[in-house]
Length: 495
Image (cartoon, rainbow, N blue to C red; front, top):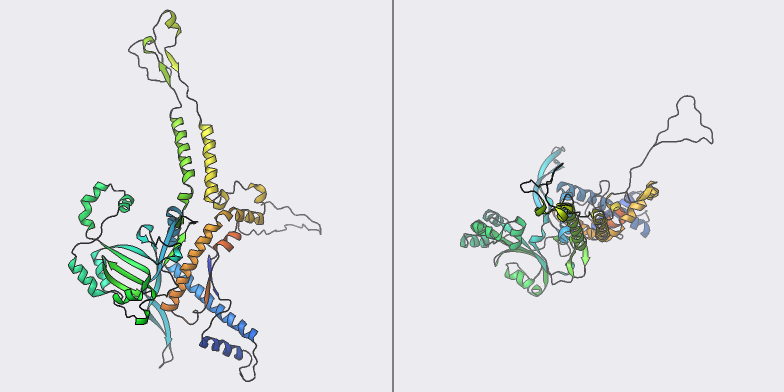
C-alpha cells in the first residue's frame, strides 16, 4: 500500500485559490485575451473566466512539478530509503529521513546561438537532491517537547575520520580557520564508543580495551537543526541586526567539542523541516510513539513460552523405562534398543515384580498447538495486520472472493485497522515531498513548474479504499463452424 507499482502515494496539486506573481497573472490575462482575438480594447473578461484560466495555469505547473519530483525520487532510489524508514519505525517506533541535501551533477541543456541561429546542445553544472536515512541511534530529539512538531530543535551525531573533517574545511559553508586550528591542537580524535554501539556490534565490554586506540582517531561531530536566537547567531559570526538579536531563527549549526565550525540559517526557510519522521503508532506516553515490537510484546512472550513448552514436552516423549537393578542379572547392556532381551533374577514374591517398568509421559502437543494458535490470533488483532491484509485470502470464504468488487471490499475492510498507521506515513510523505518542492524552487528553479502547490498524500484515502484485488479479466468468444446464436441463447464459459 505504501509503494504501489501503478500509482503514486502522493500528488502535487495546485492550490484551490492559487497565488500567482504579478508577471504570471499578466501572462494568464494576455493568453486569455489572445484566445479571444487579441485586441484588449475589444475583449471583455469576467471574474469567473479569469479564475478558471488561473486554475488551469497553476494546474499545468503542478503537473510538471509532480513529474520533476517523481524523477528526483527515482534517481535517488527513494523506495529503498523509505523501506529503511518503515523498518526502523516498526522495530524502534520511529523512522527518520534527513534532507534534501544536494550534490553537483552534469545536466543536459540547450540554447540557440545568437550569431548562427543554430540550436546547440551543452552540458552545465547543476544540483541534484539527495535524502539520507538516519538511524535512530544518531538522532537526539528534544524530549521535553509535547510533540515532535513542537521541538526547539534536534541534534544529529556524526562519527567522522580526520580526512572527513578536513574535507569540511574545504567547503564554503564551514569555518575553515576554526577547523584547522582544532585539528592542529588535537592529534587524536574525541570519539568514545557508547554502550549501545558495543551492543549493536555484539562485542563484549572487555573487547573495547584492545581497540580504544583505534577509536580515539575518530571524531564525534554534532549538527543541530532548530531554533537559534539572533544573539547566538551573532556570536557564531553571522551578521544580525540589533533589533533582531532577541528573535529566534531556524538555523543549522555544527560543532566539534565546544568549537562551532558552522552556523547558517536554514536554507529552505522556517516552515520546511530537515528531519522527516514516521511514527509507527502514536503514544500518549512518548513523543516517539510505539512500534510493532512494543505492541506485540505480550503476545510474543506468550508465543515463545508456548513454543518452548511444546518443545520441552516433545523432547521427553519416547521410550522411558524404570529398571530394578536388584532383579536384573549383572553384566547386561541395558541401553534401550530394538528386539532386546533382558535377563532377570528373583525368587518367590520378587519373581512376580517386573524388573523393567515402562514410564509413560503423555503428549500435550494438541493442547499446546491450540494455545499457540490462540496467541497468534491475539497477535494478529494487536498488530492490526489480519491475514487478508498481508495477502492471505484463506479466511475470506468463497462468497467474498466470488466477484472482484466483493474481494476489493473484503480487502479494504481488512486494511482498516492499519489506516491510522498509513495516515502517520502520509504525514511523513507530506513533510518529505514539501521539502523536495521547496528544494527545486530554490536550487533548480524553472518558471514552467514553480508555483503555488499543495502536497496531497493518498495512502489512507486512495490506496486503502481502492486497493486492487485482481487484474481485469477479458474473454474473447469465438464462434466456430456454422453455429448461430439466437436472441435468447446461453453461452457457458469455463475459466
